[in-house]
Length: 201
Image (cartoon, rainbow, N blue to C red; front, side, top):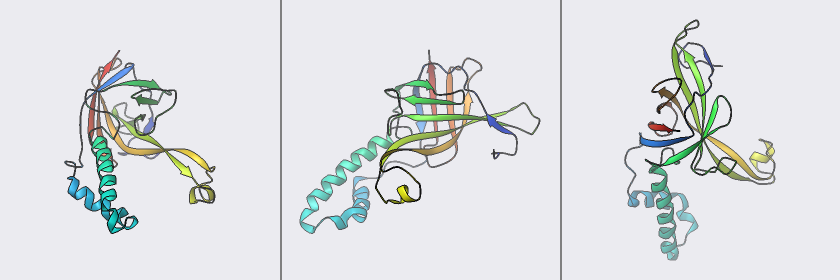
């Protein structure tokens, strides 16, 4: 495995982080949400060619719905969890946990997040170091017969689950082995900058 900082990187097991987490706060490097006027301008540029001049009302109505979804996304950490929201912790394996708003047996699109943990030592023979995780969210795409995904990606036609890497985060545990809070600080990626959760048992 490639190293983040020059030390040894290896898979790491999640400690006891409880059965539920509650999001205390999060920060975003994306700034304040843009105004509806600016959003409408971008919407018009991307899909305006699909509407005639007489359908301006439908274009604006579609933009308002899309803007509402955009604001909902921005109000949640990486589009998933709101502040003070309680989420389940599903242990998928020693190195992977899934945070779920409403667990149904499989990850839900755009509302569940998988965290895959690794440990980066300070040097090749050092026992000290830092924890990191990759954060993934999920979606579903329609794979058409003869599409790029079908022909090149060898996906089967029909609905296909996809994962989206939101970012790589440094993981801060307040105490080990029984953790009471977890803080995530983004190292790189396009996701939100940081989040802090309290661990509930």
